[in-house]
Amino acid sequence: MKRFVLCLGLLLPALALAQPFQLGDRLPAASQPAVGKTGSYRELSWDDLIPDSWNPEKELEGLDLDNLDDGDPRAQQALEKIRAVWDSAPAEKSLEGAKVKLAGFVVPLEYKGDEIREFLLVPYFGACIHTPPPPANQIVHVVAGQLPASFEPMTPFWVSGTMALDHSMTDMGFSSYRLAADAIEPFTIPAQ
Image (cartoon, rainbow, N blue to C red; front, side):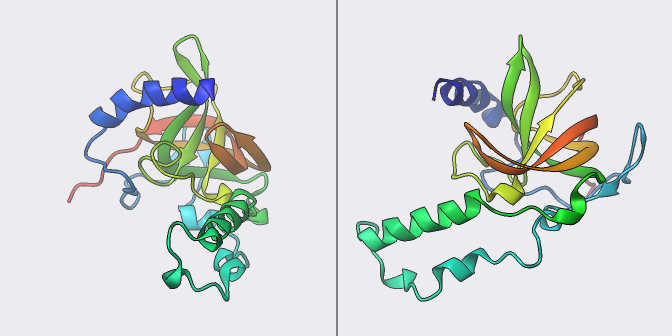
């Protein structure tokens, strides 16, 4: 809990400055080719991280959510059930060992002094901070070597590296992937 409060305290000022994004915003289409400093990487969308066979809605079949009030114990059971399904969301097996490039927002996990060394990469602004975390297969645990000078929480970045299937739990949520970062580059918003 202490780490969560620390991270939240560090993130709130960054969230206020990180406009033009608002809670829940996703990044626009790619603005860079999928080539990093150490070679070619397969550029992924967040949907690429979800196995075709995974259907979390299947777990709630037969439950009439429209007729449940917030105070109904069945509503709480449904929320707990879907949270458990999301926390155990499977990884896309074809990504094991793949050289990939993915754009997302940064949620810090581990600091060495003032520098972030491990972080979660998430698909939308505010994920894991102001909202329940996304499914585990929509969270990538990144281990970074060197970070750009402009690296700040909830800022969008491209991360290139080698993907591993590694279901893990952090204070901010579960992740189905671990990415050993070779390069981290600022995400630029495409010109309109």
